[in-house]
Image 1 (cartoon, one colour):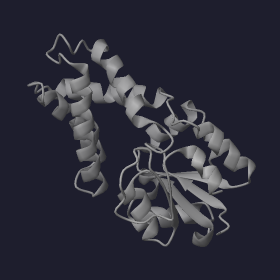
Image 2 (cartoon, one colour):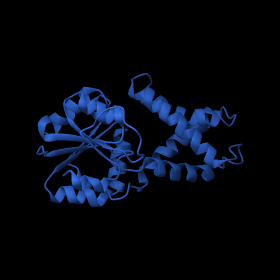
Image 3 (cartoon, one colour):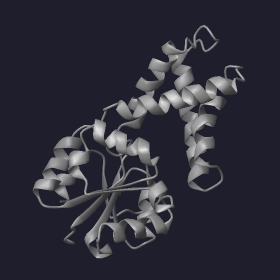
Length: 232
């Protein structure tokens, strides 16, 4: 087995439960902005539509088709349109409030703190590579008690690149002073995390929380974070 030294984690959907945290945040805003009285009469459907539009827009953003600011507010705008509400001002206010509340949430996937503690005690050097927004991601890490575990936090903004592009991985290796043969990428996204890392020659762990079928072959696959103890 390879002797890894540097473990590069993805953040959202891998360690930090963005679905749970986004739902909590939007639920607060749903009542704060009295959306039921404005015509958004079903929160569960509201969240379902938000998740749908957010996924599509993130895909467009990661491929360079739209800018960050457009992603931020249009996911709310398109969600409100599904309720026949064409309200740009409200969309932008909800977007701003959402990004203020979201990073304060602390829901992590089961065994996150335990596995990061375990890996740290085994003298692995841990880093993060994330496509998330710089300020928001650092707040998430700090508020959810993750900051202590990571030496370097590489964001798409800081690297001027997005996973799966090779430049963000090369930037991460350079910034962390890590050699590729001693490094491994751990993430939930087959295209961004796994294929991106494979394309620069890095080993991978597919963190398959949803137990989906994979059309590419990572070095390792796990369905729970505790299973990392069998690898490292």
